[in-house]
Image 1 (cartoon, rainbow, N blue to C red):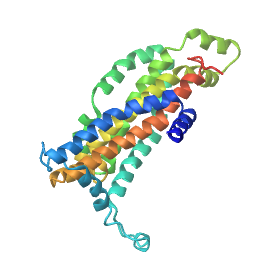
Image 2 (cartoon, rainbow, N blue to C red):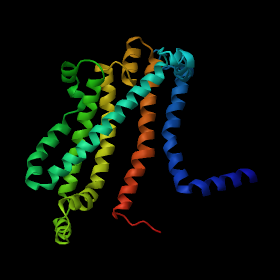
Image 3 (tube, helix red, strand yellow):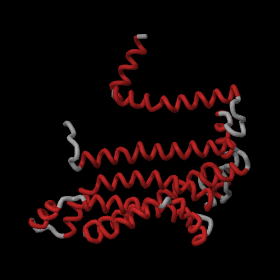
Image 4 (cartoon, rainbow, N blue to C red):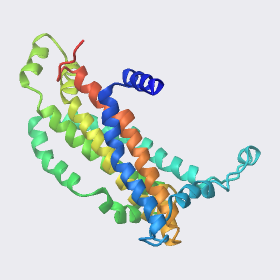
Length: 286
């Protein structure tokens, strides 16, 4: 018992009691769900075709990877590894859409927010475009671009751009005029005002828009891959459901959740905290 207590104290010192407590509380719902899931395998409340056993979902990983070629075959150009390819395809689309959509949304949002008359005219457009779900554009996107990368990328860009544009524009509009006038009085140029007043002042709104765009963008991407894609986790789920391979459907859903959860907790949340602390919106003890 002494060794266990010493180990517990060491872990608490390393990670912090509050952080461990928060982590433990966050695990409780997942433990309950996994327990109920396993109990269904024992008592068969729902048929395996409806809710497959955990072992079948785990086995689907190896089944989808069973066609992976060896190193020499991969070099020669043979395709395989369905699961890895679909995961890579979805993540690549997200990265590409973020690389293109984030700078455009922030840049146009700043330009629109700098002029209060222009931003007042554009605000209803931003509200309208954000109220229309990205999924609603899928039928038109298929007509315009066909089935493939272009459709899914368009849906992602549409979601990311408008959320970031609207949040950035509203954040810039909220910057007090006295700060802008102060920089101009000291001889600052328009670029100085943008870099040192508008951008820092709107940064919290930008990060909020970034987190929202990632969440809504993932949903739109999966839906677009299901209907208008030729690869990706959404495409895998759609094909598997048509073939009644529910274990692969469950696997796809779990992977989507884990990827987004990891992205949000390890990238977006730390970025948001750093932004709030960096621009002096909260007091950080030294």
